[in-house]
Length: 499
Image (cartoon, rainbow, N blue to C red; front, top):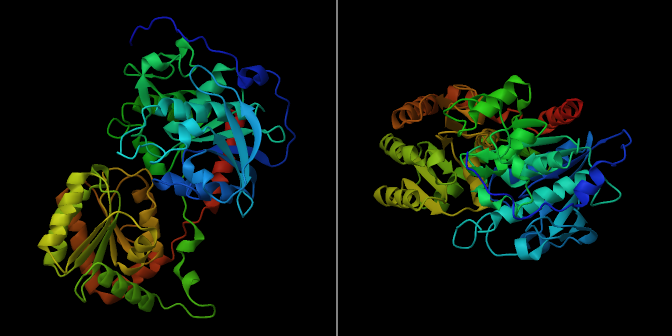
């Protein structure tokens, strides 16, 4: 552990410190939950977290009074929702003070917005600038979000509403549990790990700038290999941890998947403070809802119509063989390199492949070269269009998901509901949501050989029309709604408070 000089930035008292000791007891009723997130598909999304942040709070409303806290990105401010300023939140260290706004979505979900234009009103994504580089002040930007959540938990925010629980999501919000602890607050915090590989690590010299007490920089705190880690703070200080599938909850307690934090996670698991709760998907992924009112749903006809559209859009030849799809970020984690090699097996056996996504330039180039080699059989679109992706789920027979690790994954659930059988590595949420040989195909080792064997099993199923139809019907009958997940989260909130 590094030795540090005394903190040159004394930690000033904020509303959190002032109010934590005298926060009034809340009346019982619907549990009040502040869902804190760095993205939400209503406004801005870079991955699955955005979809979860839009769907889960809404699913929880039957049992909890859930509200969302999100930074005031340009995409949020540009929406046509009126934002009312309701409070002024003090700063700490180099974290600037800011206003707190409140809006209500058309379906009645209350969303709090951090009004800090200097931090959030920028071009780019929530995490990256227009060059694709991390914002240099990401520590301040997401410490501001975390501190606001902690302040709100003790009543320094919306004077008419104070949460019983904080629900934090990934490293950009994880520091909130630390701010609560350092202020002596007993408001329980739940941290959901959507992807352990992203940890929010910053130089230890930033302690004072972020208003973090010097004594927190230790192994039993937020120190991680000489850096301060937002995620480590969340893992250590949160009342309870959840992650997005049962298999991933077990995997992250091992060296292979624990990203260096497996010891702490194993300890939390043994304490009963780590729970796997698989994500859900929205009801819009039930295809019969898209037909004209009163029509009976013909799955085969519906699939065929979308397959013709996808082949035409991607410039493929008309063919009778199976249509495979990749709808993914083109990065190493997703096993895209394995899929490029397996494409040769697909084409050699009379199949076709369509690909959409973006990511690693080398993998993007590999996909372009694949399409050049196999004109009419492989089509590639670098980029992402939501409606086009939806058509690919509907038109394809099989979805390739050879991810080396996958905490939960949503695409395999979308695919099954749309009658596309996923071919996936047996890991994380893929193992929890695909029934091998019944609703898709799983393979053990993330290797080209393992994927090729699964692809050959898929071809065998495809040529057996009766078996393929049974598998497709079983996949489309799978239930992936948010109701069960929301119930388990509500139970976790109560458990965290009791603990």
